[in-house]
Image (cartoon, rainbow, N blue to C red; front, side):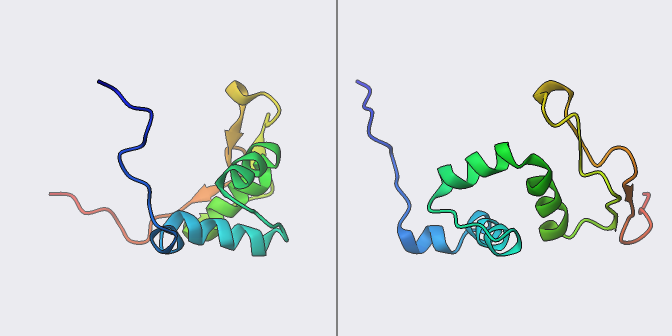
Length: 98
C-alpha cells in the first residue's frame, strides 16, 4: 500500500543548517532579494539565470576568472551554457598522478 505522506519532513532547525539554506540566504543578500521559501528561490533561479550562475560561481569559490558572460543563450534552456565564452578555470594545485 502506498501513501502520499512523505517518509520524513526535516525540522526548521535542520533546514536552517543546510548548505542549500546558506546559499539561498547568501543569494538573497548578494542580489537584494527576499526568498520566502525554496519555491521562491527556485523561481528566481529560473527567471534570473545569469544572476543565479554568477552566485554559484561566487558562493562556491570557483577558482579562476569568471569573465564577462555568465550565461549564453539563457532564454533557450537546451541551448543555455554557463561560463563558456571567456571564463578561465584554474586548479588550486597541480593534479596528482599515481
